[in-house]
Length: 136
Image 1 (cartoon, helix red, strand yellow):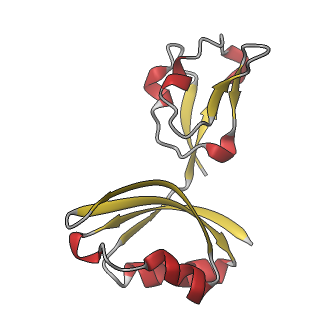
Image 2 (image 1 turned 120 degrees about the horizontal axis):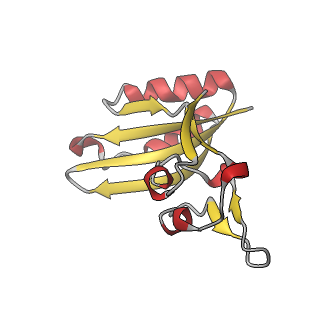
């Protein structure tokens, strides 16, 4: 089993189809929706984490692409220079995913990489420039 993240961008005409259902049912892929922006009749985008067998994920991605949905692999993550952090908390104000939080006992910054959706909002929020994009 592997996990991969993808950004899906839907054209207006595909908003009424159950793509995630088909990924689960036909390709045995577990789906975690990390972020969604849907505008019925206009466009939509999803940030998904797909978990399953590599070959099933590849087939599922091909299925999505066959319906004129762009599917971009997210092969990047945020790297944080923890040793230089002064725990100011500026980044926590912009982290809607909850990956960045202040510990309520120690008042030190905590970064939960598993919650990070790589929105990149923390990069300009940090006054010391301690966040960087790391491409895998």
